[in-house]
Image 1 (cartoon, rainbow, N blue to C red):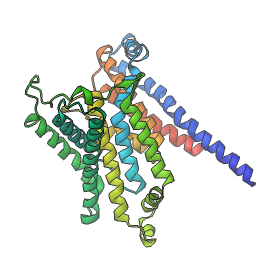
Image 2: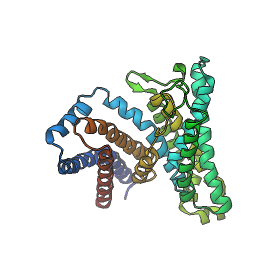
Image 3: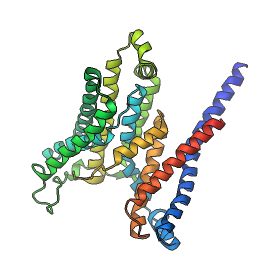
Image 4: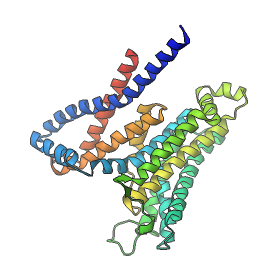
Length: 351
């Protein structure tokens, strides 16, 4: 086969992959909506109620896209926190805990600043604090693996519960807002530290997309990314070739945890404005599911995280207008993910 024909064939395959990355989620959503309608009707919901929820909550909601992008920020960061260690052969189930620790560290630094009026510099310090805390939380699990042979799947999973307990302790005792309504929540973050929107786009979402581009370049264009792939695919051969498997495990978990920690801090500064229980409930596990479906593809992880965010945002009108239980959104999300997996596997075999 001539070189020009090979290049044309590669271009066609690349174009097919790009189209599939957009078409598959759309088809999956349509199939999932059909299955969800059947589920909702079986629960006693009327078609009129479902239509009202879909129309007024999504189609006629001018803030739907903005809300979806805002909700997708911690999901994208947590998905990246899974994908980066996966390149080195590690399974990071600790995105939830790393989000929480990042949010805790970011809140602590932001509240300590008070109304100092530090502006952009303060925002950068808060975000770096969240990233460092999340990175340290992930790095600890990597050390447990390399030093004590503790499986990272177990250590990162258990670290989620420890992080949640740390947050709850702080919110119920030393960090509880004395001027609040009695609920366990921190003091509100100063207005000059909040991240808002520009031209209808959440600034936090723009930051996350830029970070995703940087992570893609790191994994696919740098020497570190190539070495990490070698370590992940064949650690024995990598060790014999002079690569330090432990060092790449440490750096991958450090970077993954930092990305999730940054997502937690961004969520506090952008969407929430203060730390409270349930701030990132199930976000880490939903992001893990999105990353699992995406494999090791950065942009598929971003796409599926946005799809999950859209489903979560659309769940509110389902409760208010259709009268469905709050957990119905997870049924829709689960069916959507299942449809994506099935369709992507079928198209992969067909190609």
